[in-house]
Length: 161
Image (cartoon, rainbow, N blue to C red):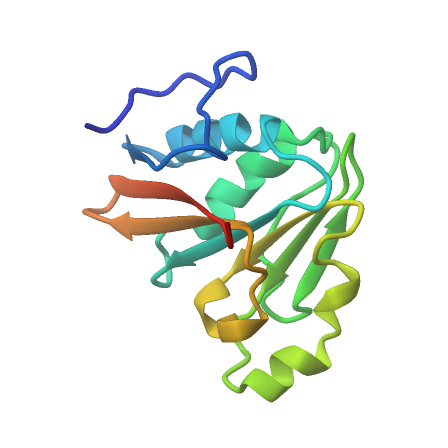
């Protein structure tokens, strides 16, 4: 059953311990869910976003950044053309967009190893393109658009253990 949302860092989603499913009905609700996810993240965490074009990956990332302490004075937007945006906050957030990269060699050439498992949180749009390069331990977030505003969001902790 999908959970009802309220942006609140004190509400524990346990995203690192169990699979969770949510439904959002507006971009604002998707951002609220992102805030709740971002509040639970720690340096070195990797969030692998998977979903079609326009599914809400950037919208969710905006909330994740706010939950991780990125201030309202910083605009969080898709790094589609520059590939990586860095946001300073309580915990740095590295927003990576692999949409324009089709070959694994191109992804390798980005040098993501300096970001993955580092001092910040990595949020990777189109993470399914990373294949074996995706860290064994990460949080997979699959976003499916059901209609113009409704999103089904599945959050799954993935671990090598």
